[in-house]
Image (cartoon, rainbow, N blue to C red; front, side):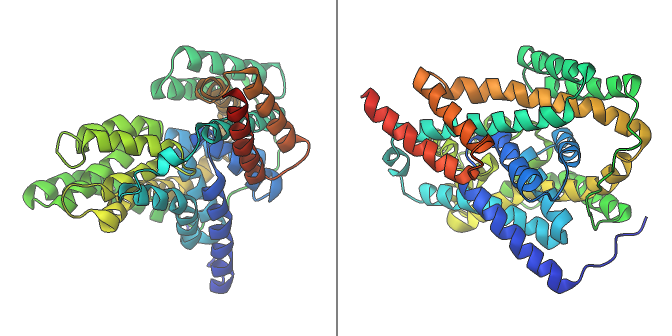
Amino acid sequence: MSSLPARNPSVETASAWQVLLIFLRLGLTSFGGPVAHLGYFREEFVSRRRWLSDHSYTDLVALCQFLPGPASSQVGLALGLSRAGYTGALAAWVGFTLPSAVVLILFALGVSHWGEAIPNGILQGLKIAAVAVVSQAVWGMARNLCTGVLRVSIMAIASCIVLAWPGVSGQLGVIIAAGFTGVLLFKPNEDLVYEPLDISVSRRTGAIFLAICVALLIVLPLLAQAWPSQALSMFDVFYRAGSLVFGGGHVILPLLQAEVVPNGWVANDTFLAGYGAAQAVPGPLFTFAAFLGASMATPPNGWLGSLLCLVAIFVPSFLIVAGALPFWEQLRTNRRMRAALNGVNAAVVGLLLAALYDPVWISAIHRPTDFGLALIAFVALMFWRLPPWLVVLGCGLGGWLLSISWV
């Protein structure tokens, strides 16, 4: 299967700049973790810019749930790739990753009082903003993707199972079961307009990317043993973490701790301080790798170490997304696969609904005033049509004002 026709270079450059600016704004304002990020992305690219339909977006989210690595960042990479090719994917990653990475590097380099300088009320307000963002995503996706008794039932059952059986295995099990249910019970709508992502990657190129990803996973540990080097060992550790971990940033943290703390690369107190700072910044939690790279006890550290670890942990996402998408585009047009996706899409909404409760809701809503602020933020997003970044800022200010009133 040949690749799509080559793009006009000037058009691709212009689109890449557009992608960079959009994702930079999202990287500056997307608080709340990966689930909230998917809500921000849906609002920006489905509802506002109409780059793709709800069905295409949910299909993309379902794919990234299957893949190892940070799901929200991988969705961003796929959106950038579809909009402006490889430069668009790079632009999406740089824009979404740069803000939190820079803040965490500065924190690692000695801005030790930065975290303490932010009042707790502001951090609480940002958590409440995540409640509103995820609620909006659940509402919108359920309205479009969970029509009919069977789809609503799959959504509810999936949500209950994931809450009772938390963890990556539970999520993957629910998605797989929903896919089989879709094949058995759904007849795909032949009148549905299929909206393919404009992926300029051939299946042959995709296979090469996947082969490179696997080859690096095998070769890097051997190279690190054959030629002992701090830089090579760091790249190996962070590359493996980005290649093999399912479930996103929170899952990767204890695994990184087991690698960098016993080896004496980073002190445990420093590791925990960085973890606390990573919760307070927008963007992907995988940028915690930049903090660890800057905090290394021996070179490479500082800016060089942070860049090394940041690139190492995200390289697998580039290779896996670019490798999987060409095959995914063909699979999702298959009649049986489309039937499976009817079940998977309903299950994905159920997973998002479960995540709205745990951890988003239970970590943010503690008092009636918290619920009130979340309700106002939800109305502002859904009915006043205020931009998400403005709602996030408003929630931060509201959380600070509420904290003063409770003192």
